[in-house]
Image 1 (cartoon, rainbow, N blue to C red):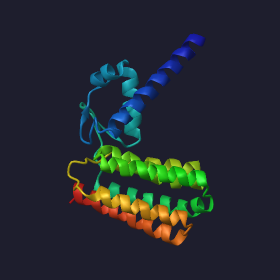
Image 2: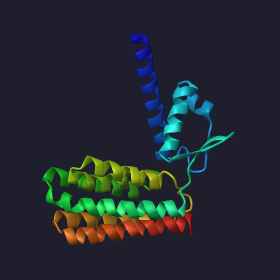
Image 3: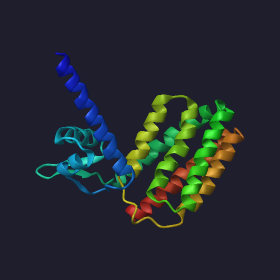
Length: 221
């Protein structure tokens, strides 16, 4: 009995490891939207059997990051315009819903985290990092969503953000937006530091919608 329980726990750990590693590959753009995924390749790369890889891919498919195609296997899901519209709408609701409570709960330590995330994004722009900027942008926004001290809200925000940027290609996006994002992040920080809820909502809404237009022009335009 103990051996079976140990084996089951080991299988779950391998599945979780495979899930995390495959998600990291998506984050790093090692695998891209539309790409077909081969079980054997992942098993070799991760050093595990096909079973945990299959389990991990099944989880990612259930979460909407992959599509299962009968007789072909899995492909990385490519976002549709309708999906993107809905996700951006939800993202805006989440961030605007969090910011008022976040500002009420500001501390020096939390502001420092926000400033640090802002600087990390700025550094990535200077270094001309492409895909990694999306992760840093996510963490900048997450830093003030987390100030609201609602773990469900923070979790939903990360899920929605990743459902957007893990499922679209970056090749068609125009250059130049990143520098504008730096300025918009600065506007958000200033509003939060000033505890100006009305202006914070205004600049956050403007920032999200500008980002949406940028993404839409590149992948749907």
